[in-house]
Length: 242
Image (tube, rainbow, N blue to C red; front, side):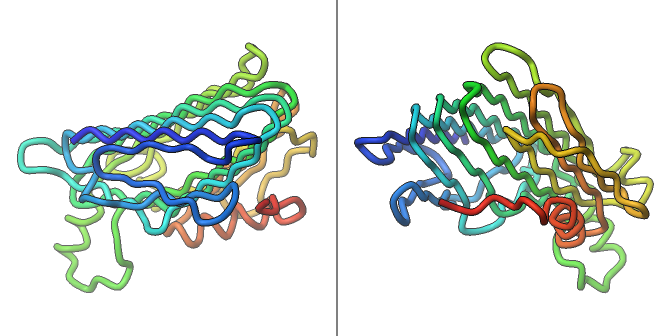
């Protein structure tokens, strides 16, 4: 299945949106939208494309009502999601969906491409977990559920200048997986001129990037643990939803 979502935030006409495939869009309040699953996706062979445009001066908050579960299909285990994000001068965007969970031997790839004007504001959150419930007691089922893998990429350009090109892997066969980390939480912020910080004991850090941005990344045994670490590093300036 191919899913395509287009969301455009404007100053004078509110939010316009279009969706086909396994996701829908619901406007919950002015400038706030939620992505809603309308079919089981992503399964093996599925592709999701989300395009978000915030016009100059407009504000938008994008969330989701439930976690995204990536599962294998009978003949294919791979699926993909691509986010294409543009924010104009004076525009403000916060993207903070529920976690993506990769399970059952699925391989899911996520790529985000962001284009910002220098006067834009962006808070971009991503939360990933390999495997589902932590309460499973059958070791065979646990191993099968946590056999998946994920690769995520993020590229950010500001006024035509590259600010960040970043890639992270989780799951079977990755260094993070070998170290017992099956979840990650990341936050990209622009503008952000704070100094970087590295957690004293955990795999978590907030990096100060050239170009006036920051990237916080935390690894953990669960998405709850990873998100908690990221929040601890971000607590001084957590974005307020508008």
